[in-house]
Length: 80
Image 1: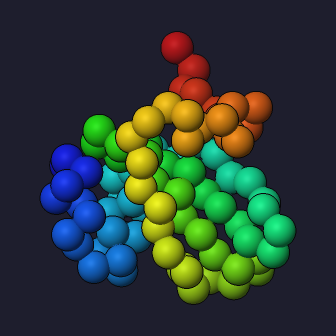
Image 2: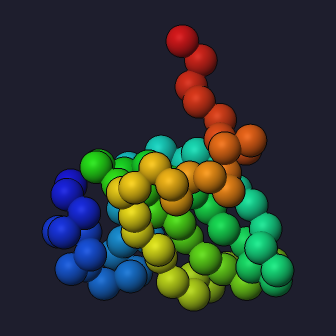
């Protein structure tokens, strides 16, 4: 799925698609937030939650590799 099409979906549907078909890459903490990074289609998605809560605050979408900088030490690539 392309980024432009994904952006048009409601956040709840985006979250389901990420869980079912996204590739989880890493997780990090920022202040009182928990962030999970997924690769999906031609873009990346950062799922923001308050720490220790299930409810998603928002999903930040991006394509530029600079958005990965905060995750570089945490990203787990599949074994080859």
